[in-house]
Image (cartoon, rainbow, N blue to C red):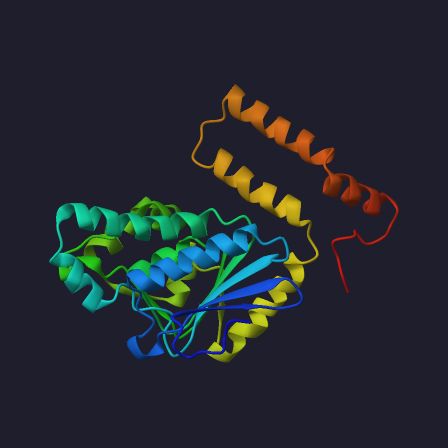
Amino acid sequence: MNTDSNNQLVLLEKSSNGVAQLIINRPEVHNAFDDDVIEQLIANLEATNEDPEVRVLVLRSRGKNFSAGADLAWMKRMAQNSHEENMVDAGRLARLMEVLNDHSKPTIALVQGAAYGGAVGLAACCDIVIAAESSGFCLSEVKIGLIPAVISPYVVRAIGERQSRRYFVTAELFNARTAQEFGLVHEVVESVEQLDEACDRFIATLRKNSPQAMKAAKDLIFAVSQKEITKEVIDDTARRIADIRVSGEGQEGLGSFLQKRKPNWIQE
C-alpha cells in the first residue's frame, strides 16, 4: 500500500482480492484538484489499467467532500498563462477524463458531500456511482465565467442533453436523488457510512464475473453507443461474440456452466 504519507495528494491502496482504491487526499481543500493531482490520478489510472492483479477500481476521497472541482489557486495561476499553456493544461484534464472513462476494469465512484465542476465529470466517467443521500452535485463553472468543457462529452452522455441544457447554464445544485433520476448516480445510500457496504456488495458481484468478459462488455458499449444500427455495427457485434466464445475465459465460463462448477476466476 502507498498510504504511509499524509502528504500524498493521491493514494493507491491495493487489496489481496484484486480491488484497487484510488483516493484523492486533499481534505483540507475539499479534495479540489490541481495539475499535480491530475498527473497523479492519470499515472495511477494507467498503472491499474495495466495491472493484471487489479479486477475492480474504486475512486473515492478523504474527508467530508468528494471534490470541490478545480483548485482556485490553480485556476488563478492558469488564467495568467498563455493560450498555448492553457491548451496544454486543459489537455491534461481531458486526458484524465479519457483514461478514467476508458479504464478496462469496472470502476466504482463513492460520492459524499460536494461533487462540483470537474468532480461531476469524474463521476460520469465511472461505470457505477454510489452516492450518500446528503451529497450534492453542481456544474458550477459558469458562476466563475467558465464552461464545463472537457467533462461535457461524459456528463451529457450521463444525464442527457435536456438536463445538460438546464444545469450547464444555471449552475444549480442538485441532490443525490435527482442525480439518480438523471442517470448520473446508480445507487443512493442513506448515510456516508453505508457507502463502503454498498461498494462491497458491488465488488462481490463483479468478482463473480469473467474479467475478460467485463472488459469486452465495456468495449461493446462504446462500440454501439450513439451509433446507427447499420450492417457494419451488426457484423461487429457478431464478431465480438464469436471472438469471446472461443477465448480462454469464454471456454472456461461455458464449460463451468455446463459442468455445474464455479469458473476458475472465482476465488473463495
